[in-house]
Every structure is written in structure tokens, then in C-alpha cells.
Amino acid sequence: MAAHSRNGSSSETVSRRSVLGGVAAVAVGGLTGLGALVASSRPAAAIDGDPAAFEAGDAPTVTANDGRIESVYLSPALEVSWTDFSEGIDRVTLTLAVGSDAGVDEVYRETLTGADPDATPGDVASVGRPSGDQSDAVSDESPDFNAVDGALSARFERADATERGDAVTSESLSAPELGGGETATTTLDVVFRADVAGGDDEATVVRTTTVDVAVENPDGDATAGGSVGIDTA
Image 1 (cartoon, rainbow, N blue to C red):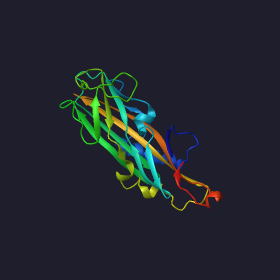
Image 2 (spheres, helix red, strand yellow):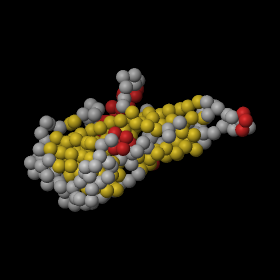
Image 3 (cartoon, rainbow, N blue to C red):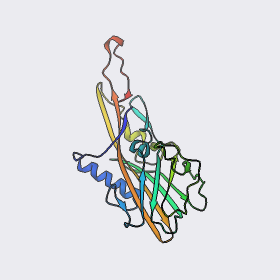
Image 4 (cartoon, rainbow, N blue to C red):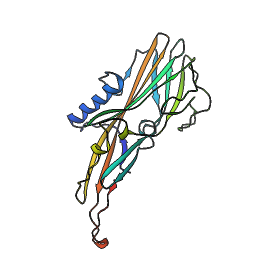
């Protein structure tokens, strides 16, 4: 598999930090800090889940053909919790954006509402109460939007990030001219934001990660006639 999620490191270039900041700005409507809770101490919101499962699916599925990254599939599942909302909540808006040096694309933006707690709009595959078993499973029970302190779980349909905008595309990720034994890697920045609102109260939480997408052209195998295969690494 060519892709995996990882935390950013101090050795990232200025360009990489700049791009990640740009992704966050798009996803959070102007936020300049990363991984920050943008809310007063009360009320508050949080996002929970295994970072790989929540932020980039069970590691994104990448398909490659002749040096091209054809698709990067994301399928996030996450839990959003809130505390100290005296009137419960009215709505939760979930947004995921993906970016690279080429720019930023919004992959998901969906709103769940207390008016129809069982609704699964757009790319939302299922919504319910957290199952409590430390898995990605979503309980069949409807989320309680009236709870002062509550939570909901949402799972999204698989989406191909390369088809959701003009920045993260097959062309920008691919390297069809790789020589034998060479590898090309693109780091994708992934930002997830949850906006929780109820009555006069609002809270926002942001989570970020990075995913490396690589294409490798292995050296030719002389015993097989020198053929060169292209695969993800």
C-alpha cells in the first residue's frame, strides 16, 4: 500500500507547513492554527476515533496503473461529542478537505440536524449513537441531539479525493516518467472539522493528519526479460 497516515514532524519544509496551513484555512473558514479547539471552554466539542480510521479511512485505498495514481479513496468514520450545551444541539456540520502543494479540495461537507436525527444526507452512509465497543461500528440508536452532554457517530461513503476538485487529481499525484528504481511521493494534508451549534451556543473542533501517496518503478528483472512493473510502494 502506498499510503499511510502520520503526524507532521519538525523537519517539514516551509512549503509543506504553508500548504497545511492553507488546507486548514479552507476547511475551517479562516482558522490559522492547526489541530486546535476553536471554541470557548464552555460549551465544547471533540472528535474521537482511531486516527487512521477516522482521518483517512482504514488507510486510503490507492490504485496505480503505469505510473499513474488513478484514485485515492477516503472513507472516514468518526465520533463527535459535545458538552455543556444547555439546550442540546440543533446541528453538526462535518467538513473534510485534502490538500497538497498543488492546492486544496473539499471532499466532504454534510450537516446532520436534530430535526431529522436519522437522516443520512449526501455522502453520509450511517449516523447513530457511539457503539461504545472501541470499533468503527455505528449504533442503530438515533443520536440524542437534545442531550446537554452527548455524542454521535457518523460514517461516510467512500469517496475518491481525485474526483472532488481541481488540486488533488490523478495528474498531480502521478509520475509516469519514473526511471527504474525511482520512487515519487506526494504528501496529502487531511483536515477534518466539526461545527456544533445549539441555541445560542457554538463550538468547533479541528483534527489534522498527513497521508503519503507514493509510486515506485522497480528496477527491471533481467531474468524476466528486463520488464519493468509499476506499483504502489
